[in-house]
Image (cartoon, rainbow, N blue to C red; front, side):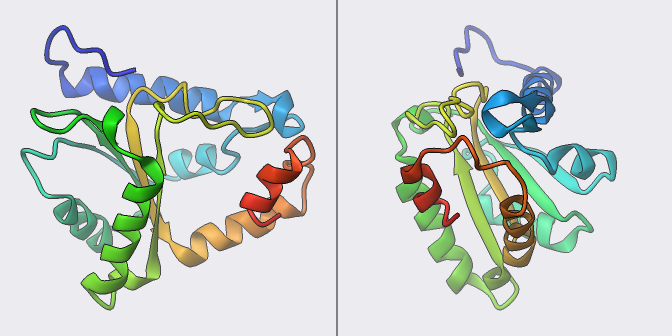
Amino acid sequence: MQLELFNKEDWQIMLEAEEYFNYLQKPNDAFSGMAVCPFLKAEIEKNNLMVEIWRPNEKPLNSLFREFFKSDYDSALFICLDVEGISFKDITRTAYQKSIQGFLKKWSDESRKYKALCLSPYEDFTAAGEATRKKAPYFLINIADKIHFSKSHRKLKGTKYFDKFSEEEKKKLKV
């Protein structure tokens, strides 16, 4: 959780994110022995994941989108830091995600092809009984091409990944 007794340096924030990424890449019984995020390891190894720290008082979110769209990365993860007047603990993940989606649909022809997934450590969320988001050190925004997310989802449907998910979880994820 984001408890700051002092201002952290970017390298410290990235180190915390890296620790979370390590957790997401480890085989997990809740996911039938697969990693929580089975595609993350390859994304990192192939340098296909853009990871940026976002301080809302320093830069608008759409400038990060623009940087990502111009890059060769397949996906982006924005680490959202609290700033004066904005505490991500107080932000409803689903509403914020829908807001970003609405923005991407209307902003430009290019932005329409992207999808946003927000991950909040402050939300009561489990997947197969595992509180995967609670371990995130910060509120995160994941952006990728809709086709990228769709292909990944289809690949997982052909595995045992969702076997231990509840029927309600499967329904939410369209499995």
